[in-house]
Image (tube, rainbow, N blue to C red):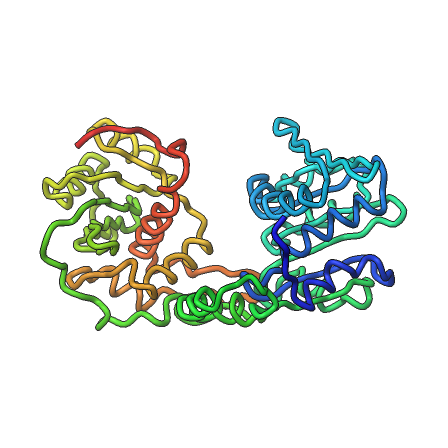
Length: 411
């Protein structure tokens, strides 16, 4: 096995349970700071060193997140140390054996309030909650309550959120009261992070995301969402041949509808044209069929790879499908979409062209709600912002399974 290097703070995570004195550990701070890697390895080593034939919980916002962020990082290291690993995918559990011991690790996804039922009733010797701020409080508290075996401990990791978030107030601010070891990580605590990656993160994050994911601070989102965007960043649509075309749609009947035409050239996606219709301002509403004709006019005879559509627009999706378009339901994770959009814009991977006035106008007015407990954007001036976000998320989704396609047609 390749020799691993650990920073002083990572070694503290690996060793804290040997020394006693704490019932829990909280690791927060910057993105890519090595906290989850060290925490997941330490959790398994603790479980296999201290317990025999016990059950443990591995939690993230989704089961896929558990497999990717916890199992994916820990498994090669554990197998290199001689542990044997058996995953029972259909039952969402992993059996680990080594040193004459065997323990079972259950995988849980804590995406919404209903998730707490999945963990209710089980008895655990310990639980690891990765990205705990993304989980509802009911799920986290239920998971903690399951740890009733003598010697059991609770393990948390997360990137910071707003200072009014319940986890910050109830666990980080009360770490000493709860007998929890609190460790704040920076990018410098990850010896495996290349300088160019750290510099890229420093360049591409902005506003509250910079302070959270680069500096590791618990700060509220405030002001303009894309406060770095200026109208003079808009360019003329380049001349030449685009290799791909896509259209993104935020559908509205009484609310505005916004469509964007995107072309790929030399690794950059350009928003070359757009369609925007505000029914309230115009005093009349359009039908699905009329919107399909508007989209066809926006396409202008180009070969459109796919149309990415607001996932709630069922009737419009069906109308597009019947008209022969390749349609994909948009990934509507708002905060993740905003973060990726900001990264793409700052990195120059996505460019807004002159003439896209609806987008330019909304960039100057799209704001955060004044709410320190959770990140929310104001539900106004957000229709072009939503269609842009849908498009950016489709770039990531394009690397995944085609299972999210609603229908594949031709144009």
